[in-house]
Length: 412
Image (cartoon, rainbow, N blue to C red):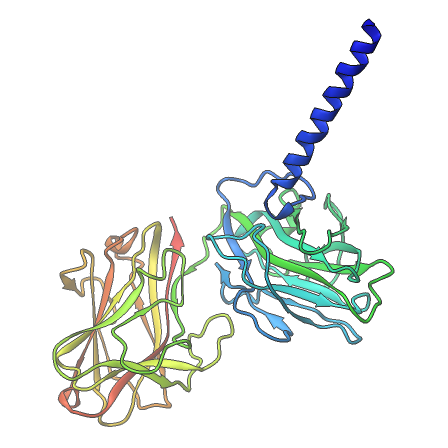
């Protein structure tokens, strides 16, 4: 009798453990199956990030949606031979999404994939303790195995020191988190040539249908004891401006908030802001095209361009933008000043306080260097003002134009 009861109790325990395991698996977000547990340094910053949510159609080269190194050449490509190519799928995944991004669209590498490689160019200039993570899955006829290697010279790919070199992705819609830990590989640190290569294998990789899927690619690392690189704090490329009169223009990207980094055209009179077809790529970031720019229409002598650019958590601020005027009717003088309290404007310590713009299509880059003005550092109330002068500024036609406006700074 005793043995029977003992066996019965053990059977009940096994059933309870199996039930609990089923619950835990079913409650995992997006059915996440991590490759391994990696402890990321709490001081790490998001260096590069692809959420792929703005992609449509076939892709050949994909720039990051967010990067701290905008001129570094970070990108994702799918080189090789054969009919395979990259495009998008929907819905994407929640796994590893940053900044509360939605699961919009993701990237897929289509079969045949055994003759191509997914190459992630991930410069790490100024950063170390690198960890790369992404969500991934395969379709029923997609390649069953992903193989990972890296290069520190931009050409030769190796696996030395990499604990995860292969992975068998789950089938969509069940996705997995892959974590590639380079934190102990010193050659990856501060390296403009760092890349990761994903190759595909398995009997299905040579097929004419099926694909592997990727979403929310993140590259994180910490500042090294090196001269800190200038980061792209706020950036306006203006390429998504709507038609018509504009009252406020938010930054296209910001390390703080696109909703608090804004441009307005305050004052009185008939002058207003709107978009125009820009012809310049001066100061463009991330290989942006010369799409649209922002213009300030006459009369402009009764209005001021107010660029609100909080610098909370940042120092050594430098502002740059491309500028021109529409014709001889556009205002011939631009005057620059700044405010540390959001109200009172001064020019103290500012080397460039005035400029005479050329006529479009001849553009110049204006650089306003606030790096020696300590009050501009870590300042939520930092504002730059542009006002206009010259006899043309009171006219009823003509305008001044700006494009590709950046604020760069060092993280404190």
